[in-house]
Amino acid sequence: MLELLRTRVERIELGDEARIVDRVLTLDAPALEDAVRRAAPELARVRVHLAHPGDSIRLACVKDVIEPRRKNAGGRVGEGQVRVLEGTAVATCGRIVGFQEGIIDMSGPGAAYSPFSELALVALELDVADGTPPHRHEAALRAAGLAAADHVARIPGPEPEGVEHIAWAPAPSGLPRVAYLYLVLSQGLLHDTWIEGRNASEGLPRSVDPRLPLEGGIASGNCVSACDKNTTWHHQNNAVVRELLRLHGRELELVGCVLSNEPVRLAEKERSAREAVALIREMGAEGVVISKEGFGNPDADLMMLVRGLEHAGVRTVAISDEFAGRDGASQSLADTTPEADAVVSVGNANETLELPALERCIGPRSQLPRLAGVGAGSGSDGDDVPMEVEL
Image (tube, rainbow, N blue to C red; front, side, top):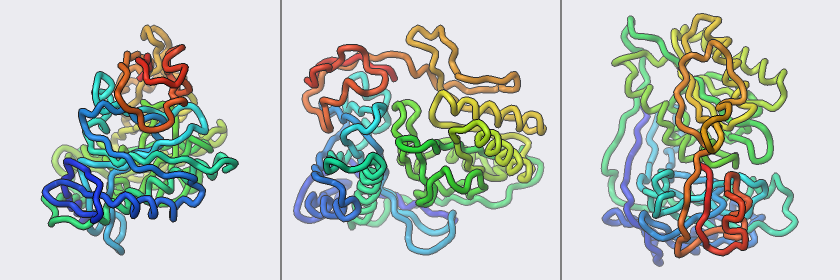
């Protein structure tokens, strides 16, 4: 049995003593900075900012967002207790190595398109020392965010406001047997996911306990376009996992979860798809839900899996966004197959928004023109001006 011990945070303040009282998290900024520097010695500067829902604040070049969660020592995956500070998260911002990191607006029209605008954020503005190689640059930012979230999760507070019990036991026979196929990026610098501390390019596909992401077993290392970028927070709060577990034993039997990657080379994609299909078949699944991250060549991974599973007699439902152009008239996916006849679209990533200037920017404002999907001339001089952006 996995237990999520939930403590609610509604506001964050800075002070000399770190604690949680009456849903207010008081943060000792120097202690947090020290924890971050120990985890990422490549950092030249660490600045701690706070952002709350409704603030006229824009976070620029967001690398990751992480909910403070900490599992008690010991116990297998799916067992033990995990302390969860809900209503808050750590967001890391830093100079861009690539060009596709996203933004978070805490108010205005952009806030409606980000779950993070509803959270009290500990925003870390991180500068890596000049000359740091790109892979070490990204590793430092990832380590800094994870260390900060772990530090916050350790801050003392009241007894949990609620305990959520998440079981995954055998279900009554006769229910539809459904599996979850969980695709993650594994394509090198800026396009990596980490499974229990190991790069997703190694050791996948494999079967895992579906509760693995809920206890923090999957961390983001990717910086693709914002709409295709599953942050660590998204893995910790995976909505597909939560819904399948909720329905388990009531409307379906969740027979398992297969984690699979999205390699770069075609031969590797074909091998990975074959092995993932074999694992799903071994589970005796009658149906499978597939989610992916990334766009372009990952569409080929998705379609290979749909085709292989349907030919094996396993019904598939795929979840994907679309890149249909700003007018919605272009081809939505880079690949397709006739067997993909049950696809849930979560929207057109090329749809545009007009974002107003906000009073304050956290992160390297001068890098905003390099964000993927930013309209020509938007913030080209680095000033805080209105922006046209794609989702």
